[in-house]
Image (cartoon, rainbow over all chains, first blue to last red; front, side, top):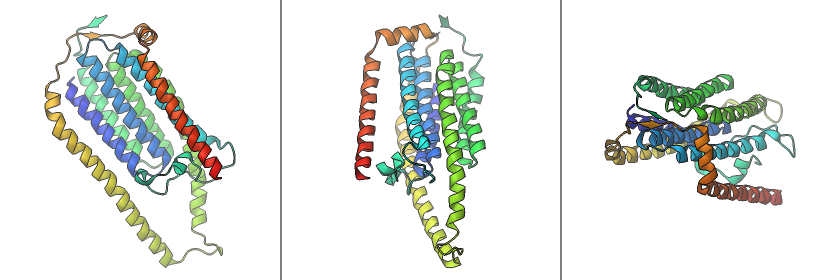
Length: 111
Length: 196
């Protein structure tokens, strides 16, 4: 397998993720785009460590722990929005603008 | 354990990478929640299969199960928000007096919507184009230097556990990062509660 091809494909995936995260206002599409960015970095890390270097164990442990952390953080955001601990939410969580103009209240679902 | 023959799955990897890009685009473009998540599931499955072809068999289970759980809660949340949003859209068409909106206000809102979509579309496209330009300009020489290793080492779960146990610099870094993120999260929640 040509490593440059994997490099280009993962970059294309990353660009799709960045475009989606900036273009869409819906939080579901943003989370999906964040998955694209994270998984493109995983593809890059793993393919480079496996094909270029002999010992891929340290990078593998780094990928596992960091992906767990990213997933936990995303899980916490969605759980916070989904659970509505204090009051019943009937509004759809959608930002007023795209990510270029976002505010903290919008991210937390308080607005 | 070393592997010297990597030709068997070489063509299979091209197919998987093409499928990854196609499913990623489909899951982003399609609006229906059910189909969107089916394609997202296929996308994540194919990424894990790609890990498998790189001889990281453990990652298929270690990453796919938490991702599937995350996707489940995201799917439930999207279903809930879609159900509520359809009611809101129906309510928006009815004015305060109970009458439907006039044609002029609808036209104005459509025009505003078009301008908003245009401004939303241009900024991400410019940003992505800038990134692609930088990538094309600076990665040409970089990719030419790649020299693949002839033998590939298989990393088992025991090796990973050993590495995490002995080399805990990564763990310290990630724990510091986690504490920093939690600190930001708690502070922002407290500030908003105070405002309310």
